[in-house]
Amino acid sequence: MNLEAILDSVFVFDRYGDLLHLLQNSIWAGALIGLVGGMIGTFVMMRDMAFSVHGIAELSFAGGAIALLVGADIVTGSLMGSVVAAVIIGIVGAQSRESNSVVGVLMPFGLGIGILALALYQGRTANRFALLTGQIVSVDEVQLVSMAILSAVVIAGLLVIWRPLSFASTDPAVARARGLPVRALSLAFMLLLGIAVALSVQIIGALLVLALLISPAAAAMNLSASPVKIVVLSVVFAEVSMVGGILLALGGALPISPYVTTISFLIWVLSWILRRTRSRPRSSAARDGAGATGGGPGEGEDDDRSTRSGVHSSTGSAAGRTVMVTGSSPSGSPSA
Amino acid sequence: MTSGGPAASFRGAALAFGRRTLWSGLNLDIQPGEYVAVLGGNGTGKTSLLRVLLGLQTLSSGTVEVAGAPVRRGSTEIGYVPQQRAFDDRTPLRGRDLVGMGVDGHRWGPRLLGRRAYRERVDALLERVGATEYADAPVGTLSGGEQQRLRVAQALATDPSLLLFDEALLSLDLQRQKQLAELVAQQRDRTGAAVLFVTHDINPIIDDVDRVLYLANGSFRIGSPSEVLRSEVLSDLYGTSVEVMRVAGRVLVVGAEVVDHCDVPGHHEGAAL
Image 1 (cartoon, rainbow over the protein chains, first blue to last red):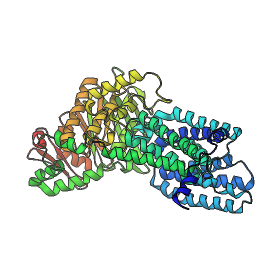
Image 2: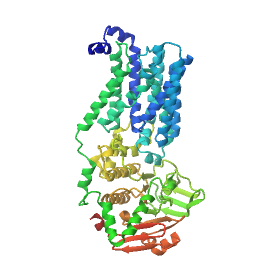
Image 3: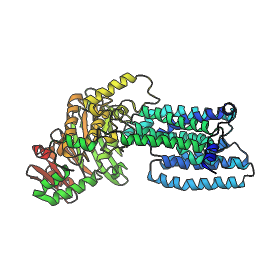
Image 4: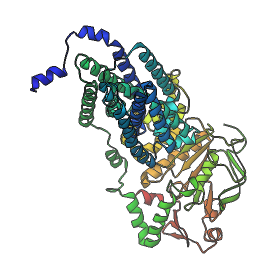
């Protein structure tokens, strides 16, 4: 295959108008999950949960594959898989160290079950790997309606918990002190995330869900620290990737995911370059230096302190320092 | 703010985890505008004391009230400033958003109405702590001192009658400890809120403190700094020979289990160096 032949099969626009009309349900579905993915992705990034999303996606794949095998509804199957995974991760504590190992254990298990189900499946082979790598599903009206309902559930749920969830995600200690149910919020978020992942798996495939739930939000965060701007940018990026990817993929026989992932990757690369090249007028190190009135070079103060007291009692001071540092550790037993 | 009564009140309060009693028989009224430092070593229940006031920890026995009412979670009578823990460089918040969470971060639903009132409130709080200049900078790029200033503004958002500080000066250098201590005292004077300041090092706040609650050895002492920070008082508290030494304007507390040191007033010029 020479380059021209490859390009010809990657970018196909024959009878584009007809296809556009035929596959308009898919485009609407893409727009829906772009909206959902862009919104929920900002919280995924805020909570540093990219790995969990991947784990949920693999169980979503397993659920979908089992549904395919037994002839049940694939959307329901993948929804059950991802919600179960999300709740397990949520119960373990999505931000704890343990959750990484739980996700690492769940993920290959889910993949294995899914592959088993696919291997046993006797139906059309074209369906087989769609759950993993995505496809232009011929989304029918019924599917589109169910996706719209699920998307509405996720968006409405997010809007209700938006402020407390932002608080609990970025500043858990103070959120707890303000009486917010931090743990319940985390579980509610995981449920919504499970639904969002199951939706995305339908179109983009379990392996590539991160292109929709992570890349747009990560790109947005490269460009702004304002919560509102981040959400808007993230949704725009997700829509451009999703709808743009589907429009490019319509004419050919290739799955849509390479188009979607490439667009979202390019957006992220651009945002990263912008972040790098943008001048950073406020570096905290520079400010500290300017703010200290003759505070001495380097990390000065603590050293000054021990030096000064060291003249009189270096041992006592040094020991005191050690005791105090451990004594004030936030993980002190009474707070546990 | 409730007028008249104490900002916080412990009656026969005790806290135990399993068989280990952190403190018991605590009777303490913190008056409006009073500044109380809570000192003590590791595991003496300093932070737990704050958790009790926040309603996150129940007493083993006794009662505790905040602004004349039994403690409850999420009380707007309390402002809380935690230990400085540097925000990740990529935290998607600006200074003003951190303060804003103190204003309405606990509310459900999106902020559809009252955006202008919200903005004005946040601006006013930022101005009160002198953080207007870096209000729009990502919090992750701010210094520890700047982040703590924002946290003070966040804690003041509900006009609380009791301000709780949990090792809020830790990991700041001396210069910034002093600046933050000034800010706390200034806000205490301005709002009339009582301050309960958990710290391992009384030095930066000793000029402002009215009383010290010194926790050790399952017991405690309450009094002015000069009453409590004495060899015989602390020896009695620890049950072992503890010496409070004043050396070159500096107080060192040297004990068998705990080696503590505190500066006395007048040392601050030296500290600024």
